[in-house]
Image (cartoon, rainbow, N blue to C red; front, side, top):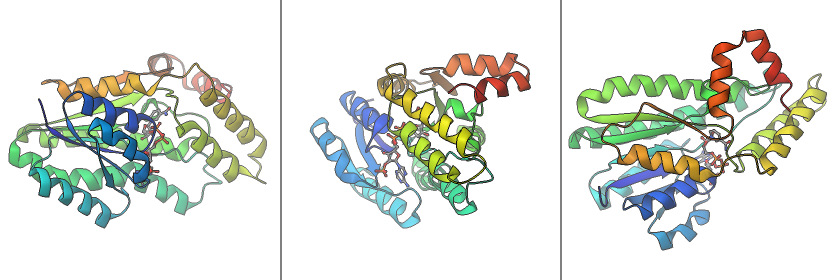
Length: 272
Ligand SMILES: NC(=O)c1ccc[n+]([C@@H]2O[C@H](COP(=O)([O-])OP(=O)(O)OC[C@H]3O[C@@H](n4cnc5c(N)ncnc54)[C@H](OP(=O)(O)O)[C@@H]3O)[C@@H](O)[C@H]2O)c1
């Protein structure tokens, strides 16, 4: 297990930052990618190697993977973590913003997977760990495009797992609930901005303020709970297909499976 090479995207903040540190401390040779590469530099003391990476740019992805392969000749693990929440009423969110959401959360992930698969197939081993969300299992108020992206992450991960099984590659989904990072503030910001001077403004403002309050509170889980499960999946010879953890995740999935849809909708609309 020692010194296996792992790339984690979105390592400049939140879950990715914490996970880069945890994997590195547990013997992996970690490359951490992000656009704000300077934010990864403090992790150098833990052995993390910062890489400039924008998952929406093919050239940037190609450069990052080529850098790793030139130095290491192989790549064992990929943690697709980069992502954000483009919240807003479907009527209000522009098609270009919706495309951006899919470009980062879905095509960004696929772009990197396509680049690493030939190297993993060559070794007849590899782990792909995709950070989905409870939001890939249930839909929250005003989160339409974010959920569309995470439901896509779920579907594509299931497809890739079947396709790459004969090549010794294992694919797992991580489905966190509410984790205390900047994610919630970025999503709330998108929601409030996109609803300004629209018929959704009042409800969106209330929901956005509720999100901000929740992400400032102590009730959300620490990113460490996610990092520990990613480490477990990376270490395991038989990783699970799905790992569910963090605030509200298990209860959300359970309620979604037992409540009639109108009741679940009501609950989501009145949560903030
Ligand atoms: N926090 C939660 O409650 C929660 C719950 C479930 C799932 N998740 C998922 O967990 C993942 C990590 O989110 P987080 O909570 O840690 O949020 P975060 O602190 O905002 O971190 C997001 C990371 O994604 C990176 N990123 C965004 N756009 C990128 C791009 N185009 N190219 C490369 N990197 C990009 C950011 O880096 P740069 O801006 O520096 O590039 C940053 O490092 C996301 O996929 C999110 O959807 C979060």
